[in-house]
Image (tube, rainbow, N blue to C red):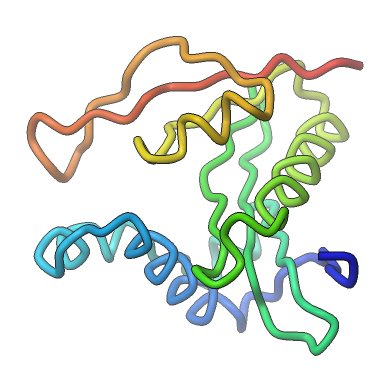
Length: 154
């Protein structure tokens, strides 16, 4: 997507970004019951957008097509990376991930860690992250998230 623009999200956009994340999660074929159980955990508040590094990817028309949220630290945490269903596979995720690494680097991080959506492990591996373990779901007993780590070059 050559006309993609990435900018800092505004707190008033939290609801729209939460809806985008929910649509993106649905891409993986989860049923309505599952999606209902995880909805609250996928919801951004205006305070989340204000306190964290939340960056929005938008098309040339200004339509939101993805976002990422980085929580600073060392390692930094990629808490969210979601792409609109219609844009999955178009390079938006790669651009957002590269931007998230840049945000983490600027914050002084030497690594970026991710509790990956299980279906997204291949994407993060293509981005250079390696699996370092598992994080148990706090919402669904027996479900785990692959824990991924990318070493950030200085």
